[in-house]
Length: 336
Image 1: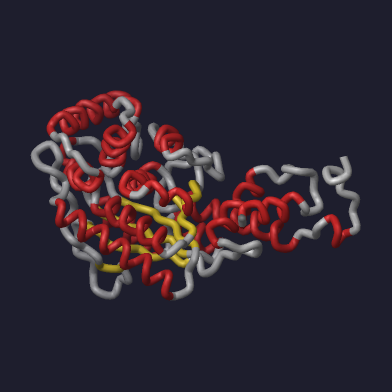
Image 2: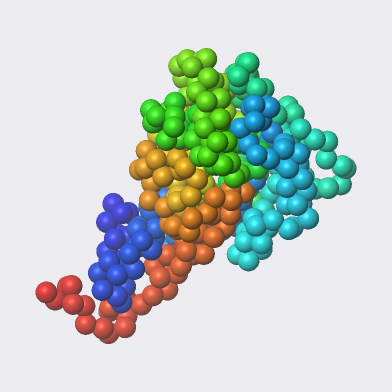
């Protein structure tokens, strides 16, 4: 068993047993996914999917929907948090229009995968048709295949979309059975009155529909960017890549993929514990163990970029740290 061999190698590095804590767990997981005693991370990439949401018309966000396209332009100019951290750690960043309600000018380098100008308003009708949802998942899978074909074996996902904590909250509520009020948070900065209004709107939405499958649930309550992330996660699992989850919204795509195919979690690492209400419950439901606890709630894939060097460190100790035999150091555990 590769896990047993990896554990022996980890235990035989020149350190007290278990003294590198979570790094040891990460090394074990990555080596198990890659089925090797010398795992490596190749050509890391983060895909940021952007889309708008019809539910914004109900006042569930303090921000106007125009901020979605304005932030995409900021990504393209290199000025956002995800740009800074991706540059810092030499991670390839792709910005993908999944369904932004805006026509980006020619030559601005946004990748056009637009399937609609945002989702429908869930108060009145499902966010997406089943067919549109499937198309979005296929687009996400296509983007992941492109990265795999260029030699990438570790991929993360980010998102941008004003109002997208609402679909994430609904997906958590429906899939995990967690009371809605425990799933709804401040999002982009709602005050207490705003959170109450958001909860009341989403309560009306969830009472309106009774989807019976994960795909139908995603179509009714999700977003185009969340559907593309879901499809991307499933494809990355098929290709046996390491898959890094970001915060609340991106993780709702992982949650949906998990409901469709539970073994995707074998390849998933949760980058951080978001400060957004509901994320802790979402990660716990998927039995995740976040790498970082930094009170982040920015999204964009920033948690992925920040966690990446920790994963590098996990493999550096495994692959480059001397064994007790190589260093001629007395092994306390072996000689107890």
